[in-house]
Each structure stands twice: as C-alpha cells, then as structure tokens.
Image (cartoon, rainbow, N blue to C red; front, side, top):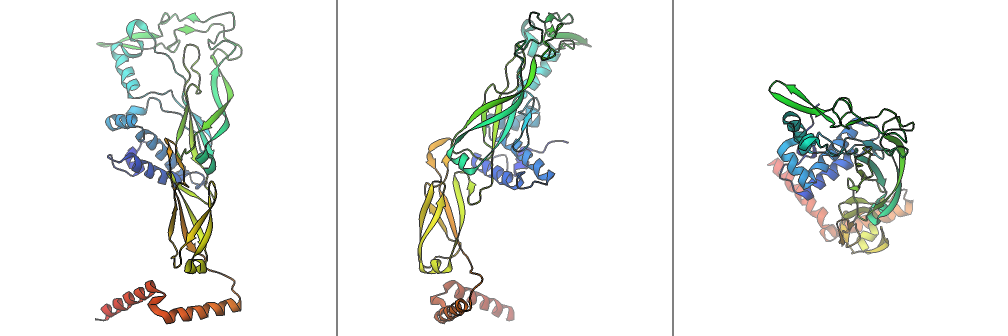
Length: 386
C-alpha cells in the first residue's frame, strides 16, 4: 500500500514552521501512543506513521530531499523500527543518492563499482531501541543501561567467515572484483556478483562459530546518557553501535528513541508543564495560600480573594530545561478548579443554604457574572417573543 504524504499524516501544510511541526507531532503521538491504546492496532499504525513522518520533516536536509523526491528518496535504507519499548533492525542508512547512484551505476558501469572495480565499503544496518522514561528522568536527565540484540562481528574469525588459519578464496566468477558485467542490448549492465554477493571472495573453510557468516548474534549491554530536557520522539544516536557488516565493513548506528510515560500529576507541552489543582470554594472566595507540587519540590501559590474556578497561575522557571539550550527553562501552569463538597451533614447544608440566600440578596454585588448571564437570557427570550 502506498505511503501517505508526510505532511498529510501530520495534518500540516508544506510551509509549516519547525515549532508547529513539532506541536502537531506531539499531539498525534500522545493521541495514538500504544500505552494509551493498548488494544488498538489502528492506533499503533498511526503512531508509527506519525513518528516516521516527523523524523523526516524535522530534519532540514531530509525535509528538502523529501520535498524534491518524495518517499522514493528514503526507500533505500532508513533506520530499523521496533515496537513501543522494543527493538528493531533495518537496512543501512542510505538516501536518494544511493538509489539513483546504484541505478545509473548499474546501467553505465559507474556508481558502486566505478573507478577500476573499487567496491563501496559495506555498512551494517542501523538499529532502533525504543526507550521509555518517566517525566522526571526526561526532565532531569539520567543514565540508563540497555541490552540490544544485534549481529556482531565474530571474534573467532574477525568477521572473515573462515576458520582460523585459513582465509577466503578469490571468487572465480568476478575474479575478486565483486561485480560482473552483463550485456543487455545496447547497454552494458554492471551488477553485484551473484556468486559472492559483491564481496569478491568465497569462504571455502567456514568458521565453526559463525558458520561462515562472519557475524554472530549477541546481546550487547550499553550505557546511555540521557540529556536533561529530552522529549517524546527525540532520538539519541550511538555511532557504530548498530549491526556489524562483517569483515571490511563498518558498523551501523544505534538510535535510541525516547517515549514518555504518562505522569499522574503533570502533562508536558514542550518545555512547559501543566497541572490541575483542586481547590475549595471558600479558598477561592476568601483568598489564601495553596501548596502545589513542582518537579523540584513544593511551592506556594497565592490565591487572591474572589478568584474564579479555572484561573491559570504561572510559576516561572518551574518547567523543563530546553535540551538544546540549557539556559532556557519553561514554566509550570497551575489551573485551579473548585471541588464541590460531597456527603454534607445537615448542619453544613443549612449553612450553605443560608450563605446562598445572603449572596442572592446582594445581587450583582456578589455574582456579577451570574447577573450578566441572567440579563442575557431575559433579552434572548424577549427577542423570541417579539
């Protein structure tokens, strides 16, 4: 099935700014995150689709390439994908240059094997590890130990695939060039040797540990430093920690992709934090001081008398440190909402009724918004009658 346009996936136009792009992605990521939709295969697909689109469009160079060439620019080798909190493997990193270079190189004898039969250095697959963090870990930074299953160079044969003491033989089909030339009509097509698959050598006495593959499966333990301020969808690249390409090649990279667990108190929007604070009717009416939580501890919030439910209070510098600018810290927004008392005693009900009657006697003096609302309703019905 053809992929949807990345801009369409994120619900933005092609001129979208970096900030709006990230905002749109964050909204979709929170909506379709597997932790919030554990039994929805459709949500998982949409989450991965949005993540893939953001990873391309958030990178200026990749975005320019995508705008020019579309999806074809990345079909040659993007980082492998794993599930939430999981792990996956994929093709080695390559872009539109690999696609068109290989295509025209095969037809006209250039590209990977041009320049007297020189072979392009092989590269192992990039890998992705999805790491779930608490909000506190993401905000403050941490160091975590992870175990990554991957294909690594066989230590017994050093990646050659041959038994110690022996070495691979030159391929008789391509004579060590790794490429063969085939005449197709008017064109001379050069392609990877079907016998040695482009390596130029054949393993005749295979290593007993890797069965001649030059690579073995291992669970690599790594320590990953998480910088303070990382957010949902951010990636940490560990160069050379991907899969081995075997002898003569270079390792791919490992991309640690961050996802955040839902927090019981705070929600995060970029570098800002938000929380909902229940408050008593009397505190809103009379004013007072309220203790609120922050990620650094407790803070005091002054409530002016007559504060309305839904009022937002801002605590500067109590948010999240910007991961790309350590000198900038976001804010904490506390929304106070009145909590209606329940299970009232007879005496409490009497007191509330008495209070309500005295407030009504004061009219707009005590309830300006209610009086205005009543006037609007009266005007509305008067208009209906006329």
